[in-house]
Every structure is written in structure tokens, then in C-alpha cells.
Length: 86
Image 1 (tube, rainbow, N blue to C red):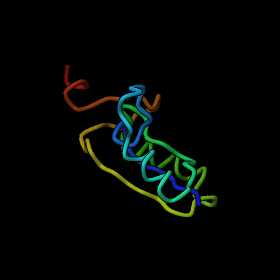
Image 2: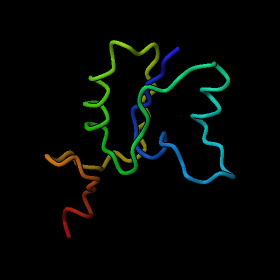
Image 3: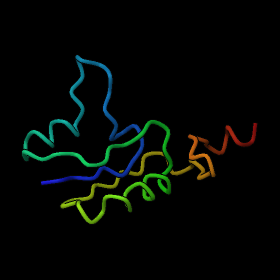
């Protein structure tokens, strides 16, 4: 089974060995592999664009919207409204 996580850091791999992310527990529970993971600071539109590259190979898609105020941009940088205003 292949799962695509469409999100920001909420679905990313964390670098803390003492912390087991919920995504890793889900993958182990269902003996699945992740073909897309969240990226720190990513906006939903950029995550969706990445999904289009793997959607045909995906069995399940999990979409998590945790920061709806992030702005899409040409460089796909993590930019929020507050950063853009300053």
C-alpha cells in the first residue's frame, strides 16, 4: 500500500529520535510506504502540485491543512501572510 501525505511539517519526518511521528506509526500499522511526505513550511497548493506527480501510483491520499495562511509563490518558499507583509 502506498500513501501520499499532502501537508506541511505536520506530516513531515521529524529529526527527533525520541519522537515517533504519527505518520510513521500509521505506515507501520498498515505495512505501507510513503510516496510523499509533508515539507516544513509548505503551503497546501505546493503540496498539491507535488501530489500530481505521484497521484497515479498512490493508493491513499491523506490531506492535512494545518496552516491555511501560507502563500503559494514561484520559488515554492514557505511564506505566510505575516512574512509577506513585513
